[in-house]
Structure formats: C-alpha cells, structure tokens
Length: 619
Ligand SMILES: NC(=O)C1=CN([C@@H]2O[C@H](COP(=O)(O)OP(=O)(O)OC[C@H]3O[C@@H](n4cnc5c(N)ncnc54)[C@H](O)[C@@H]3O)[C@@H](O)[C@H]2O)C=CC1
Ligand SMILES: O=C(O)C(=O)COP(=O)(O)O
Image (cartoon, rainbow, N blue to C red; front, side, top):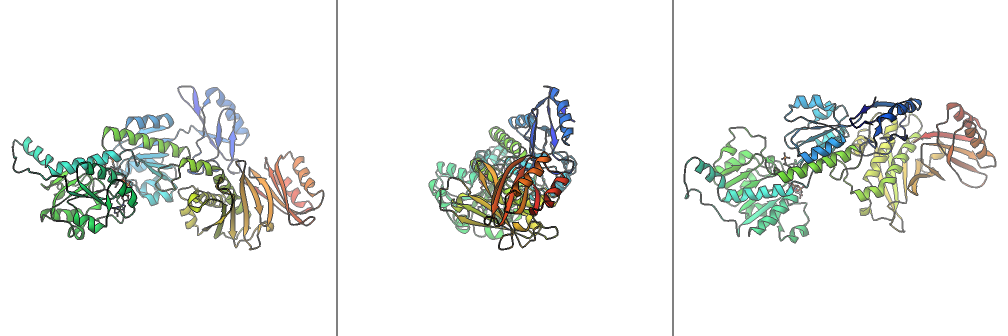
C-alpha cells in the first residue's frame, strides 16, 4: 500500500527482502530508489533514501515489485513524537519530513503506549525516557532527540541496548543558560527578587536589601564547558576575578580567556561566588554536600543553572541556615517541579526560577532547529554529529570513510559465511593497514560495521553503530584491533582491512591462513570495496552482491568450465580473479555474479571435476 499525498505524490517504503528473506543490497526503479538499510545506511539502518513517486507511477511499481518478490509495505513517512514544546521553526522542518505528533504532558503510561508507533521521540528536560519506554517501543524507536544539553532524563544504557540513537542539541542554548546564570548572580547579589516581592507586598525596605558588589570578587566556575566558559567571559566583563575547576578542560582554553584552572578544594575554598556548570553524572551527584560546604569560604553565594542533583539539597538548607552559605540562586532542582513545601525553595535567602536557563525565544528556536536537523539526519541514516551514545564523527571524516564502512561490513558478512556450522565465533582480529597516524584514523565505525556484518547473518539481532559494541559483548565476541603502519602517502585513510576469525573451522578450507584463522582482506579501489585476500590466496573481486569462491587445480580449461556452467544458466559474471600459490598448483577463483545461481547450477559447479571446494556467498 502506498499513501498518496495532496500533491499527488506518494512515499513508498519497500520491504527489502526476497522471498527467502535475504536482505537486498539495493533496488531501484525509475520511480523510486531504495537502498537496503542493511547495506547502505549502516548507522541507524533506517535507509530512508526515498524519492517521491507520482501517483501514476504507483500501479507499475506495485507490479514490478511483486515480480521481484518485493513487498511494498506501507506509506513510510516516519512518525516523530514531540513530547514537549518545541520552537515552530523546528516543527516546520520535522513536518516536511515526517508525521509529527505533538503530545505534551503525557503520563509515563501514555508515553509508553504511544511509543511503539513512533520512529523518533523529541523531548526537553521534563520527560523521563526510561527503559520502559524503550521496551515499549518494541524496537521501532530509532532516535531520541533531546532538545537541549542535559541527557540525564534519558536512560542511555537502555537506548544503546535497543540500538536507539540519542542525539542532543548541545550548542543552541549555551548563551541563554550563561545569561541566566549571570542574571541570577546579579539579582542574588542585589536581592532583586526579594525586594520586588516586598514592594509588591506594599513595603519600602531600603535598609533590608543592601546587596554586595561583584567587582573584584572571586567567582569559581565549576565545570568549564560551553556554558561555564561563557559565564566566565561575562563575569570577567563585570570585573570579577574568575577561577574554574574542571578535571577535563584544557588549561590553554581557560588561559585564553584569563581564567585559571584550580583544584576542587581550592575553587570552593577561595570563591565568594560559586557557579555550577557540570553535567549530572554518577560522579557529580551530590558533589556539593556537607563535606564540601565545610570547606567553603563563610558567606559564599551559590548559583546553580546546571542540575539540581549536583547539590545535596538538604545539606544546602543546613548551610544556608547556619550562615555558611549566605545566598543561593537556583534554576534547577533534584525533583522538578520541587515539592510545594520545599524548604529550599521557600528559604528567604534563596532565589529560584523554574528551570528557565534555556528559555529564551532565541534559544528555543535555535534548539528546535538544531534537534530537528539532528533527528531528521539520523532518520535518514546519516551519522549525527551530536550523537550522545555513538561515535561522533565529523561529516568530512565520515564521507572519507564511507567506502571503507561498506567494505568493513562486507568483509564481516563474508568472513562469517565461511565459518563451518557449529563452530562458534569467539575472537575477531581486525588489522588495518594505513599510512595515517593512529590519532588521524577513527576506526570505531569500521569496527561497528564489521561487527554488524558478522552478527546479522547469524542472528535476528539488528546491529547498528549504536549497539554494535554492546551486542558483540553480549554474544561473547571479542574484537581486537591492530594497526600496521604503512610508509606511504597518508592521503587515503586506509590501504587495507583484514578480518580474522580466530580458531574456527571453515567450510572453505582455503580461507584458513597459516595461523588457522579464517582470513579475508579487502581494499577500496576506485571507491568500491574489493576482496583482495582469502586465506593465503591473493584475489581481486569487487564485492557486490554475490561471490563464488572455488579452489581448483591451476590448469587450462578449469576457469572456462565454471564460466560455462554459469553462462548456461544466464548468470552474469561481474568480476573474476584467480589467485594461485604457484603455476599449475592450487588456485582460488573468486567470481562475482549479478544473479543468485539456483541450487542446480551450484550443484553442477560443485560436481565439476576441476573444483576441489567451493562456497557461494551473499553480501
Ligand atoms: N538550566 C538550564 O536550562 C540549562 C542547563 N544546562 C546544564 O548546564 C550544564 C553544562 O552544560 P554545557 O556547558 O553545555 O555542557 P558541557 O559538556 O559543554 O560542559 C560541562 C563541563 O563540565 C565538566 N565536568 C564534568 N565533570 C565535572 C566535574 N566532576 N567537576 C567539574 N567539571 C566537570 C566537563 O569536563 C565539561 O567541560 C549541563 O548540566 C547542562 O545540562 C545547560 C543548558 C541549559
Ligand atoms: O539543555 C539543558 O540541559 C537544559 O537544562 C534545558 O532544559 P529545557 O530544554 O529547558 O527543559
């Protein structure tokens, strides 16, 4: 079934399986082109490389697809659930690409019941995306977009285990959060909120609300990331002396804006103002506790626009009560919204805002566009630059690695088909030969794709860049990587990739190298993946759809015999190469074919006296 839009166009989703459920590499017709999720869109596997088909093209498409054993399943505009308010510009982008369901304030139960119909979910900080949500999605949810920075409301482990990519919008609200931090700092120092409330209550209390000056005071920025450094920059403009603590921030970045990085204890014990800008993690949870407050300068003032959980709120109330902390200005709370009778919120020396750090018109439009682009990109199968639970790879690196990504998956897929039934795979050794400096070559995607190639043909697990390492670990698959340095031009990222399946039996004995491992090697030639080594035999065959590997005795006529058998059955040879140990000794024929030969043809090849062993491989 295909849905026809008002414009008379339809989006078609093809279920890319042949009747025996082998994933197709690609299918195209004049009306629609589709590349299998399994081969071309390895990152999330959604493979939505579609173009619109006109309604008049649809019947013909159905007929052609039926003839090829393809099912046209349904209109497949993806569905995106937007669970919290998002800026219009972002919504408009999403609507161009997908069905968008804006359902705000869903209960956890309602979210779980909706999610199995959604390909992507977009949230801000108010929605808890728990393991239950991923379980309830039954594998359909492929992307969670966090329209903001902090992803502490998303269960990243559960997301990764289910192969769901989590992306955030890490930059568009930085300035808004920094400005809110500065606003809280200044308004706390001058008692703006309290004085305002007092005047509105009919009072005029000039003596009560004498403030403190900022100029010359020391501000400790705890967490010198995007927001922290913007706060530091602004505080310096106010004449403050700024120090920072961040175990992971480069000192030269701090130095560049005149900020000294110091230890945690030095920061909190010397500062007049402490501003928190670290993420909520297991190590930062309740970092500001009784022990920390015991070390601060008496009368310190604290600003928190990061996460409430970084502060032990009961300890803060105690510190406020005994004067250790003179004032606090808080935008974030351990539980949001905090209980109505929260001692902290009601404390007279505390200024509060309801998590407004990112809430400016500009930031919300920016965040909405940033997250919409990230989610759409991810649904198209592109690797998101703001991925939280997958390697982040800059677009230019990715495009350079793209043919190697395909090669890596095909080598994995090929190697696993050479394993003799029953012998489990435990160890995989990947050897990259490259002239690049190790720091200049990110192999995580390649490793993930090899894992995908190895695991998918032998299981019903869907593997992508997000869950590859996790899935390998679950299956007890140990993947080690080695680098061989090549003394040549580092212009191309890789010379070759070898995949060794260690200590396994092979159904094609010639694929075993001297060490007894199934060994295959590939290279990228003219942008296309080629198989260049099988066991100890050098070959050269383009890795397209099907490959036949034969071992034969190297003597005249043997190659022709196999070629004739294929030709008689109208199976087109796309590529052929012979690798041999020595003239007239054993040789390996690697034959690429465009069509899948039927069983009878394969039997004939096997029975040919010239052939000692052979294997038919689907890529
Ligand atoms: N209130 C609001 O509406 C907003 C809150 N935020 C929150 O602000 C925080 C910072 O955001 P960004 O600057 O964008 O993130 P970021 O990732 O750029 O910076 C966080 C910094 O904290 C550092 N850090 C990690 N552990 C630390 C530790 N134990 N001690 C000191 N530093 C540590 C990191 O090295 C990093 O440099 C996050 O918690 C984010 O969720 C961000 C935007 C708006
Ligand atoms: O981006 C962040 O980390 C924030 O805290 C902003 O949260 P919000 O999107 O306003 O719910």
